[in-house]
Length: 320
Image 1: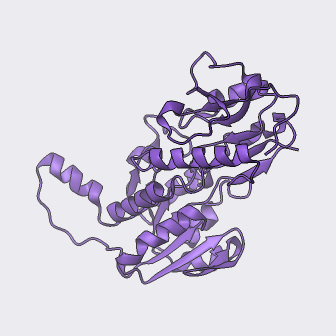
Image 2: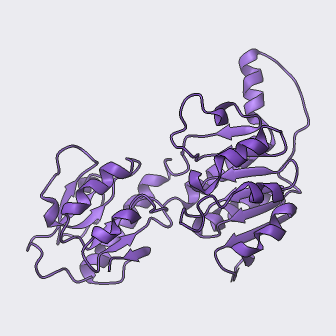
Image 3: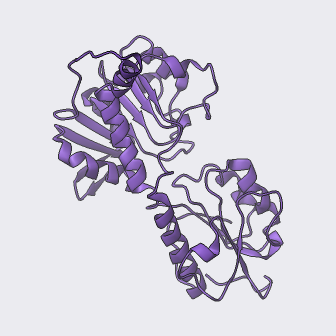
């Protein structure tokens, strides 16, 4: 990507990982490490490529963008960019916002399967029995012979299905924004949800948070799910109407396994913490040992593309 002629002669790249720990970075650039500390590593106006710090909250990572007058690339290390998109109108024209598609596929898909299996087999209940020194054998639902619906069939959704394959599911249905064919079968549009939801024993959410998906999982959505079905959310908390979900799980009609919640972090005393049939993990789909090598590969590849003037990967928005 051409660098603005008015930019400083020595362009600077801000990275959320120490640059000396990433092998193979282009030698043509100056690097600075910033992880939302109070002091900036360089003048933000010199930054042309901003690697957004990971898991630091929206306010700190957006703060320097107003001063990045020459930034050409804003590269997140998250699959979702909802925390950065409000700042896009302040970016210089032509600046590109890129997400981290591919970085979290393995880790998030692993967690989706972990939550599904743990909730179906009631692992939390067995842990509580262990804490109490109780031995009580029970029959629990298996994933085998179950019908699974993946809502959000992007890279993470496809990775989830790949990991479902050995579990002898009766059916895996796929839903995305629009209909298309995938290597594993048809992908249905979001408009097909009313007919697909009543058939699913497990519904896994893996779609981005947008204006179209906010509160997608409404009271009507949940009412269409079959009795005893499990909702698994590894996407964004605001995709689910928390009040509507609570109404369903408190009756015992539905169960839920949530890596994300609304609000988030979930405050002490919130009814979701103790709702029956609800398993909660604190937004840990991405942070695992799989994150660092994939994040480094993405940053290295994008920077080589940037220096060479080649098209960047994972462009979500170009500032107007």
